[in-house]
Length: 119
Image 1 (cartoon, one colour):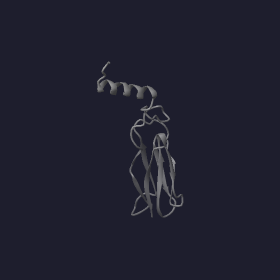
Image 2: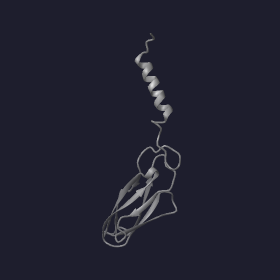
Image 3: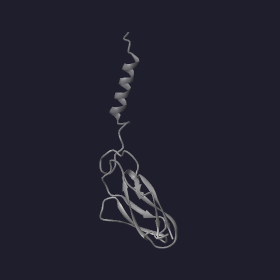
């Protein structure tokens, strides 16, 4: 009877799992592995309060993502958002007073929020 050591069994098991693709990396729309979440700078905006401008920008980034980000205001009565000509940059414009969130989506539907307060 042939004896197989536990390290050999583990190696065979890992090889079998890898050959089936069970541990394959998730890839985004750009074909690269998504490593990290969507990040925004700044994470919040104050529009038209105490001398603050009524229009401001933020920038979205995501490691390993080279595609196009999207952004949507949860309340267009407080603020609207639109893409600028710079990749990942968005302009937020005050349309009324209150608070809302801008939802920013990147690769593989990863998303984050930008808090907005308007006076």
